[in-house]
Length: 261
Image: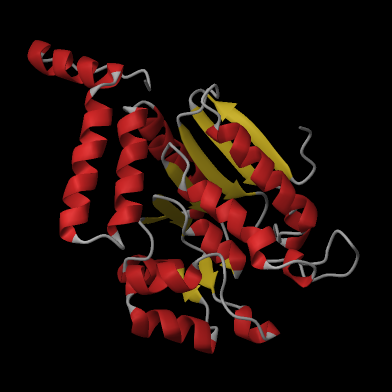
């Protein structure tokens, strides 16, 4: 597929997905949304070469939310169809992705863009970046899973305040609250994000993918259910070539060379 509003690159085993409409700070319109869903399908394919997904935005912003401008392509998808037909499939695809996800937040992450940024297992933000629950300003409610994620990440009080007051959350405060993982100088963002992504991409991909699924499911599971899930996932991970390589490397006192299978 030819992408018009995305850049899809492979940096070794890292898949770099860049939102590419910098004139509107990578606001999502109908075309970009469909391209995002198609790209994630390609990335998730078992035959794909990627072992870690890194998402960022071109230019000065990560994603400023839904494109509220005029014109057919600029209309926000939620104006024409419900969330079940537009954004929700994308976020479910990202949740189920069988590899780690890193997001490099290089500027504003607003509205649905904030939800997208928080889909990273590791979220790295530039010092000038900020997070913004902008929905109240256009008479809408948070989406992209924000009302599920935010209370679990930062607590109900802070989550409600962010959405009800629609105040910008600077990257440094987001780090203090535990919403994101790291804050780095603007000029160092992509180098550090790629370093983290390359580290993950060189790991035992099946096990890392199962780890992210286990943490997603833990948010709703009982302790007993989570023990059962860990047992099932451990059986799957233990049968991989990477697990055997890890055991051999441990016995031989060397660094394991994982192949992602």
